[in-house]
Structure formats: C-alpha cells, structure tokens
Length: 259
Ligand code: NAD
Image (cartoon, rainbow, N blue to C red; front, side, top):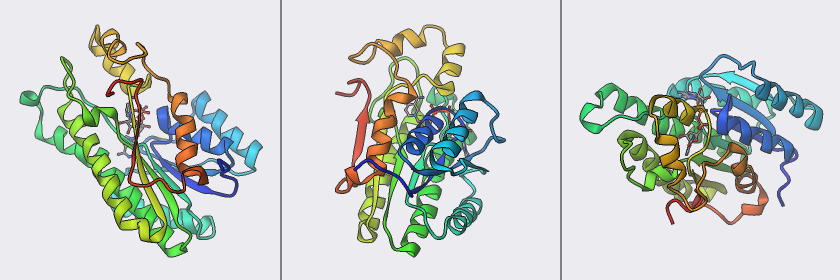
C-alpha cells in the first residue's frame, strides 16, 4: 500500500528543510526523487545522507536541478527533461518550495507582497502544472501534493504575516480546483497544511524576533514546535496507493493549533 518502488517523484524545495526530509521519506519508501531548488547543489551533511541513501537503497541517484520555480519555462523544460530521462515516467510531484516574511501590512513593500505570491502560489502552480502535463501525456495518472500551511486558515496575533497567510490559503484553494480539473486523468491533488516546523524558515525569524519562539510553541495543544520528520508518514501516504481515493483534500497536521 505504501510502497513507492519504481515511482518517480519530483520535489520542489528539496535542498533543505521539509522538502529534503520528505524526499528522504519517499526514497526510503522506494521512490526515485528529483529535487528542484533555487540554491546551488547543497553540500550539507543532511543532503549527502539522502543522496547516499538513494544510491544504496534504490540504486538510483537523488538528482538535483537548480531552478527557480517562478520561471514557468524553466520549470516546464526541467519536467520534460526529467520525464525523458525516466522514460516518460513522472508519478508524483511534491511542491514544497516557499518563502516567509514577517511584516505589518501598512509597511509591506509592493514588490515583497508580489514576490510572496509569485513564489508560494505561482511557483506551486508552475510545478504542479508541469508535472500534470507529463502525467497526462504518459496516461498513468499520478499524485500531486502541495505544501500549504495552517497559516492559511488563521490570523496570527502579534507577529504578522499577511502575505504569507494569504498565499497559503490560495495554495489550498488551488489544490481543490486542480483536483477537480485533473481527476478525469486519475491525477490526485491534495494539500498538506503543517503547523510550525523548526526549519531555517522559522529559526531565522526567531533570531530577529525575541520571544516569538516561546509564543508560537504555546499556541498549539502539544505545546511545542514540530520537526520536518513528523510529516514523513503523511507524504508517503499521499504519494502512494494507500490514498488512492483521496483528492481535493487538505490534510492538517498542526498539533491541534487550528482545531
Ligand atoms: P526552508 O526555507 O528550509 O525551505 C524552503 C526551500 O525552498 C529552500 O530550500 C529554498 O531555497 C527553496 N525555494 C525558495 N524559493 C524558491 C524558488 N523561487 N525556486 C525554487 N526553490 C525555492 O523552509 P521549510 O520550512 O522547509 O519550508 C518548506 C515548505 O513548508 C514551504 O512551502 C513552507 O511555506 C511550508 N511550511 C513551513 C512551515 C514552517 O513552520 N517551517 C510551516 C508550514 C508550512
């Protein structure tokens, strides 16, 4: 049910954080993973570990493509190349690339607001659409998982991220609509809305906003932040046959924050 042997999954934002942890989980379940990210190929220990795991477990490379998800042509071209290299075979897309920014609305620069929507919403759409194009051509269906956030359904108190929260609400709504359109091709589209995760995205905010970490820890029922590893099971579930009748859904894993 949860087996991903022989499946090819493309993960955006796969250089670090949640995207890298979920890539590792998919590789452990048997998948070949292609990571897309803006950064130069990472040389971190975590990245090396995932690359070696892929070779030793599946005899497949953990392939890295340095691209910007906001560039539609670049994204389309990369997916076409991956499909060709994998013999017309892309079974899953996990869109995890994203950015965050804390700023009161009255001080928000227009270009920062636009960039947030361009990366978090348009970038997600570009990746999902490029994947779906290849899946439709191959005719074998597939699964698309887009990382939204519980921030898409709350208003933060004190620390304000209007653009981020709006962008994540848009990702959930995008997911539902793509699911409705692509169901006919047996392409399932779901979103995952995590609570706060201790990754660079948050630790860099904590560095510049004293007291924020304690406040955010206290905001959910379990009284702590989550780790990227706590989403692995969900990613494997949503990419595998185990979720074959699930589409158009938003899975909330947030320590009860939004309950
Ligand atoms: P992260 O900053 O560690 O990772 C994000 C990755 O996206 C980075 O590797 C970055 O280089 C890449 N990226 C950014 N812009 C890109 C672009 N234009 N093109 C290609 N790659 C780009 O953050 P993370 O916490 O691992 O976040 C992963 C996803 O999870 C994001 O979508 C984020 O919004 C979401 N999320 C995070 C949290 C949290 O608390 N950390 C909570 C809910 C949802």
